[in-house]
Length: 305
Image 1 (cartoon, rainbow, N blue to C red):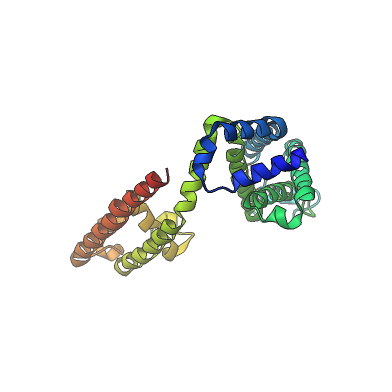
Image 2 (spheres, one colour):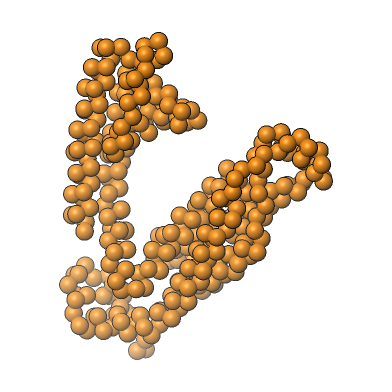
């Protein structure tokens, strides 16, 4: 009965909109007691296992992905047993995974899996998935094991797909969710808790600004597209449309590229009148995106802080 009243008290405090209530000594003592008695030990164990998992994950990425690419030759295809049928000459060789490191990552994921399973049992399916943090846990654990499966999956000819697009997308997702989980566990330390909470608040407050800023970038890239087509080598794989958006974003961040101005007209450059038009549009983009909107984001971050 005493524990039930305690839960009711903490629930009422957590749901209160009076922020000043958390500055009172009684509430501080109650929160510290609950944290040290029921939650701190469990969270510290999970934090240690998460840190170990992140370290092993980083070692795995360095071992598998930070390699000089090699390519199949005709002799490699002919001499391979069984014969390689899914790859061609001059196609990149996918390095084999480090199964020992993947096994260690899978063991580390058992700790958050057990914790979230117990939490699901106690709170119920609906209450559990009503919290955004629990969705992050599910994605982190699910994608973690899915990543292990993809990395260890073999083709019929004995080759692996560690450097293929799906495997890379899943690995990137695992790294991003691991970063978000790391921020969550950093809140255990009091000196980090305020910073993590501030970052979450700032990102949430900037959502409207980011939509507005991206809309501006798309429209200004259309203005640039009227003047010239971005043909830089770095845009050869994504096409001129997304290359134009990337060019506009780079301009807004102060990354200036004037190669188009140095080309002759015969090579796709601009004539004299187009030069004047380019500089007028360039000035417009710098004023709106670099000088005005970047100051907006600084003001918004300062306000949230």
